[in-house]
Amino acid sequence: MSVHHSSSGYETGARAYVKGRPSYPAEAAVWLREVLGVGPGRKVLEVGAGTGKFIAVLKQCGGEITAVEPVAGMREQLVPAFPDVTVLAGNAESIPLPDGSVDAVVCAQAFHWFATAAALQEMRRVLKPGGRLGLIWNVRDERTPWVAALTAITDPREGDTPRYRTGDWRRVFPAPGFEAIDERHVPHAHVGSPDDVIVKRTMSVSFIAALPPEQQAEVERDTRALIAGTAELAGRAEIAFPYETVMFAYRKV
Image 1 (cartoon, rainbow, N blue to C red):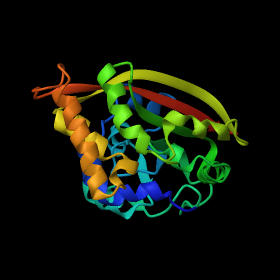
Image 2: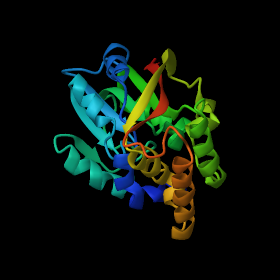
Image 3: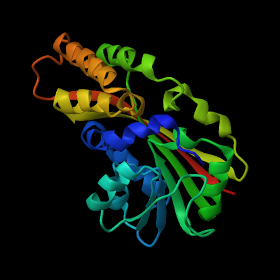
Image 4: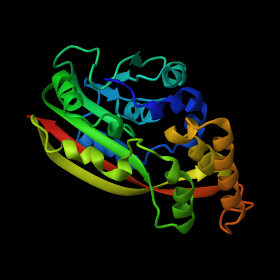
């Protein structure tokens, strides 16, 4: 499976990704335990683990964690942050694990990159009978006007980059060998300085990080101008970036 060209931005943007991306709400750990069965004595695989943002949530639940990540720049952030996690180079259509070797597969902020029938069947291959597949995303809440204005800065530059918001990932469902068992939507917020949760978040977007330097500078300039011109953001040491966390679960049948 080839990696989409926009993901090249993660090679250079991995550090911004660590600071700029939100963590996950407490409900995510509840979902992992109650719906996906993650816990002590269980084996869980995260596909497209990135820098390990979701690994911290998996560790709250216990069990043995394996992470697969195709982008070397992301693995360079992931490995030192979680030395007790098995980190493998690989992708969703070529997972370097045996058949029926894990109890759960999780894709956090990633499934839209590899939403293909082949990837789903590869994830099904490594799942034990009755194993669970979980998909989770933090999605910007554009009901807040300044968040919608931020989207207007970034999205004209997205090109053909796969994204959750397009809904294209849904086309692979219903999928042979899987049944849908759960869907959840919960409010969430990323609290921090405007520089961290807005500027670094924006510059960590794959297709922004892949732009030529002068175009990246333009995006950053426009983003900082938005902050300066928005009353609830300007001059604030700390703000809350609103998100909705969405979770979908499937059982291997």
